[in-house]
Image 1 (tube, helix red, strand yellow):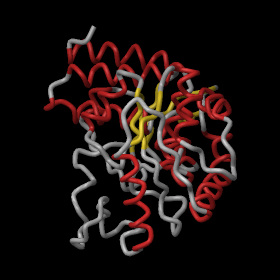
Image 2 (cartoon, helix red, strand yellow; image 1 turned 120 degrees about the vertical axis):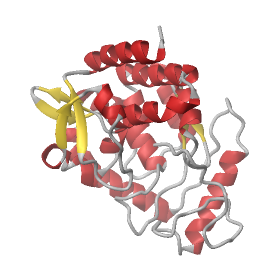
Image 3 (cartoon, helix red, strand yellow; image 1 turned 180 degrees about the vertical axis):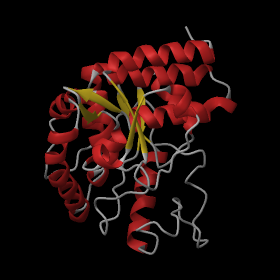
Image 4 (cartoon, helix red, strand yellow; image 1 turned 30 degrees about the vertical axis):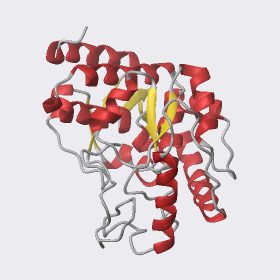
Length: 284
């Protein structure tokens, strides 16, 4: 999702890369991948907010990563994704062969729920990410995960942003949920942003709802992860959503989630969060 630390501070090796990768990142020792990340980051950094996202000419290898993820995720979506997500994904008209351009995805999304995708070079602070949601702006990366591990990414990439968030934001209820977080983030003191981040994590990123009594994913982190989506219902400890419990529960973004929260439906979640935010943040 987001990070409290910027990704743009030089690399662990001391090179003048624009994007810093951790030593355990699949692309850390791949000079070509790092150069490509720098190239895409520089395009995003030169972008003017409000303008269409710049076009990225994706390589054959990057398209192969997209096709691999798409092929593996689609049947798992049919089994474990909620209906609102599946309907939204169809409305994006994505291709299995061609990587989506962020500008085209944004235009389709905006016509459906008013949300638009704005490019960023990489991880941004939670405050910046969440606050933009109030204006129906979703900050999105444009780079692609390393080809050696197409089904894994240590940080958000275009596949996660599109197959996870953009498809979800085509659903009016999920779009409203994101706007709610944005409004609260704009009113919350900086000392309480971590609380909001955890709630966002356990809802918009890894939330589960019940359809005909069966757990279905509505969270973008689950919906864009082939491995986790296929096993969350059997491997994770599932508990009814309680914002007090969720805000006190740390999470590990590098591993499958051990605890997930479920709701009976999205209207229930909205009412529960609105009451919580009114009580704890004084939001109307």
